[in-house]
Image (cartoon, rainbow, N blue to C red):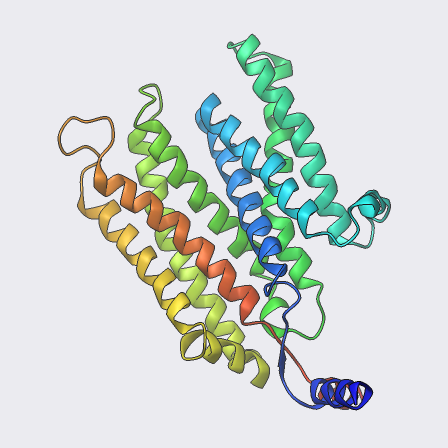
Length: 302
């Protein structure tokens, strides 16, 4: 009976559109969180390097190097074999991603330590900022490249996906540095606000473009988009879009400080909206992934 059921499930997958579940359902939730937390930490670290915020760099390092590592390690079926990933960087984005995280952890830590010990700019500090910034960018982008390499899922095969991941990461980074700047007077708040507002609009446009390109790619891509807009996860998609809209309205309509307090309620809501909207959008990208039927793939190849 079990063999018959397994045969039916296998052949349904070969002939019908089937949603992927390994990377988002059950333990896959940890992978989703690891993707986003790593990107958010990398984005915050990179933004903090640009604005020379030690607190921002420290928080970004903890998110991308520590919390992401814990989530990934917990998700692994056999953690003792994780070292094997490092051996195949030429052909595997999972391997490259692990190297990015490891190198970011090392150079990010050194950059923070040297910044605390030597506040003034030196050649060593500048070199560490450049290296840690490059690896932070790698941590932000590699999730999109990993998804690009999964064959048979149209909405993961778009070349713009890494750009969307980087945009979401930077948006979250600017949101957090915006909140940190409320307690750090030496940060250029006007520049942070301007960049954050610009990224809100850019990210919204990128999400729209991503949906359009997925919609017109093929029939399976169209089903993925409809699954987000009208299907089971529609409420998550529209909630994420709504939070992004709320963040945009608050960022443009309210002053940073309404009463002279170090931080205002509109600022907190705007920051929370930026972070939550990107978190939910990442969830939708993973949850709406649908495989092209194997039979159709073979027919096209022939």
